[in-house]
Image 1 (cartoon, helix red, strand yellow):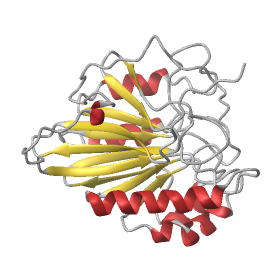
Image 2: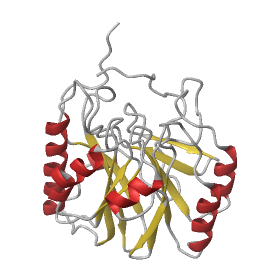
Image 3: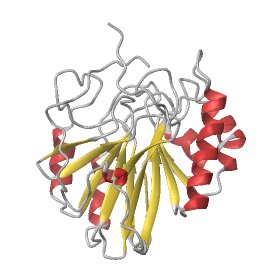
Length: 280
């Protein structure tokens, strides 16, 4: 698939940082005769379905996603799913159809935050999903702070600082906090021209050591991790739709065990055998 950015090579890290394991650790075989540790929380983050995008198999892509996630849940239970933006492609009226036709088939609760292609204002988002575009929730003592990074015109914006500050303060006594933002708030390299530079937001987040990770969509070609402040990992989950990005469709799993250790890995759900293809 084509991509509108080159792969970042000089900022990736694979060391265990802030209690989060190497994203590729799932490739390691589990020791035999060892009981899997009990989990406090297990969730999936998936982004960029682009339902309704012309020239794509968006109906098939969404049928596949629901089937993959229901199977994931049946094999190893999930607590919920987070859909991290660009649920539809430039037609906000399709949000209702997407919810009724596909998302209603999920066997697991789900939450969603807008992306720049959703073109949804607060009122529309609430009418479809029952909560506003800036929305936080807590499950089993672990909060997820979800913030909008776009507007109804599809413009890139920084997260609402007042909302984010209030949410971080609300959960300041929790051991682990996660933030979900469709568009990354930092340009790691010059070619990240479709990221949004938000230094004040990053400075605010850095004040809260219990923020363990930030999760992003938007960049379909990214399925790895980069860092801000030498502390906070920013994880990407590629895409499950659209016409560009990684050569596979997939999603990210996050698991937290009873000792509050955090592990995350990317799933190649479409099992595409070809990776990192280029046309010169």
